[in-house]
Length: 296
Image 1 (cartoon, rainbow, N blue to C red):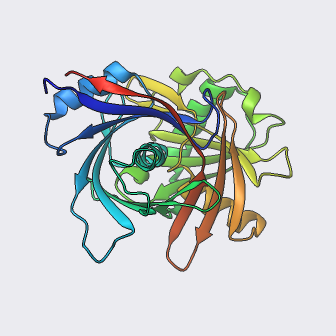
Image 2: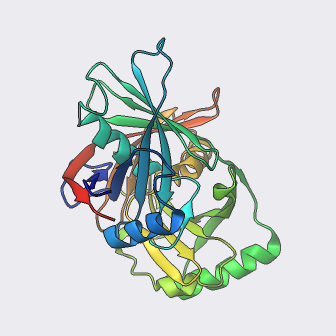
């Protein structure tokens, strides 16, 4: 497009310029404006943990407080079926721009070609809440558990103390998630060798431990292995579709509690596990970092 394509950069689950989960949001006329190869090239150029591509969609006239959008999520390596933190950044960027959503709009509906359907709401306290489907947790198969233990030993260390391991069953993308509770005095201080995850039977590795602070119900970090591409996600929203139900059941927590992702950037999440609707609602602050145009 000769006139350029608008974008925003922002951070989810933080008020800080250098904190939270960063993402780029590219606003397109339609989700088919560019071929997948161009969208992947754009994501590589931004070099963010996630780039969301967003396009306005029709909203029924009866839903005056709602605006609808199509959405796709790309890492620098490939498209993913779901990303919670990039959806929150997308919602924050839309709410921050009155040309994209009128001031009376408080709810955003996001539909992805992958089948993921998410709703983001502007909350009275300034946070943005994104609702995701909760993930059912099951025990690992013996052979997967053995391979995972080998990978974790290479990544975190041979002295790793594993408390529990659970496999996530939800949407197609979440079938690649694994939750590992470990016994450690300081999860944030661990310096992983991420290449150790190559060969793991899972893509997304959620490492969690009891919180050191009474403010939070638990701490977590997320390491991903997409083929030879391994990285840490500073704040992973979708990981909490496993973490929320796991810790609520383990410690008999109330429906709503706070969680702390202890990556270098850090993230503060308000988590609500709604067992009636089968959803996990994640609320956090949004920090707008910058806006501009790209010329693919």
